[in-house]
Amino acid sequence: MRKKRILSGMRPTGKLHLGHYAGALENWVKLQEEYENYHLIADYHVLTTDLDTSRIYQDTVDMVIDWLAIGLDPQKVKIFRQSQVKEHSELFLIFSMLITANRLERNPSLKDQIRDLNIQQTVYGHLGYPVLQAADILLYKGEAVPVGEDQVPHVEITREIARKFNNQYGDVFPEPDPLLTVFARLAGLDGVAKMSKSLGNTILLSDNSEIVKQKMRKAVTDPQKLRKNDPGHPEVCVVFSYHKKFNPAEVEVIDTDCRSGALGCVDCKLNCSSKISTFLEPVLQKRSELENNLSLVLDVISEGEKAARLTAGATMQEVRTNMKMG
Ligand code: TRP
Image (cartoon, rainbow, N blue to C red; front, side, top):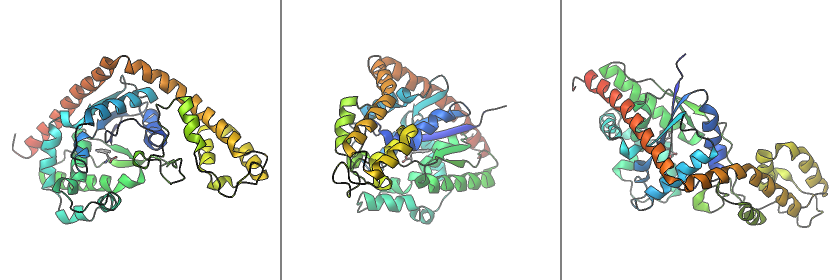
């Protein structure tokens, strides 16, 4: 049976953290067995909110090293940059005609970004963010898109554009379904609901055990547990949430001992750091192999781009034929 095709994407943000792992990468690695996976590096999308391109290349390389180190297998998946497959721009242009400005202005993700980044004036390309994303997905006829909750409105816009195109010019595109990541949103070390680079509250996939320990020391725990033997409330503790993810075997004991006051935060944190470092050990190992063999990483990207161009080129040919612009 033909494998279903998945298109997933991420903006190149440099070295990734445990939040990326829990929210996306863990899922991607699992999905590569069952689906045909295309992983897009959304470098053009960066421009929607940041015109400084000086770090994009290094951020791309760092991100791809993390993707490979965590277990994406280049024999199974394709990894490529959006900017290196010109069909993205072409299809984006056509798709721009198939959706109203009004519809895009109502996009809730846009509103969130404008608020979070305190953007005063929205550029045209930012408004068109989901249109470019629709081109990303549909060029590869992606049938499923693994995303977190926040990206569901974008997949909905993609479906609308696919429908509009198919009605107007004849069937070319599938209507992709969001494949909701059982969205384990990992909290930040500072207790904020989301681990995020801009908040500086992350543990990186590339952090060694010493750094993990240091960062963990600062992690926010239950504010009512001031002394070691005070009874604690694991449900409000960030460290406990990490235990749940990376140390499931001991979660019950930790819960009991924290509540009774038998377990203090210092020991609990040391244990947690050590479990996270055990998890990260093979990732660090793989990472340093790749860093020492950068040409291998660049080959993966360039092979991915060759394959992506073939698929994207074939789709664009169909698009042009259907539009009688072939
Ligand atoms: N919008 C996604 C993000 O901000 C990145 C992205 C670009 C993407 N193109 C995509 C995600 C296509 C899924 C499919 O994280």
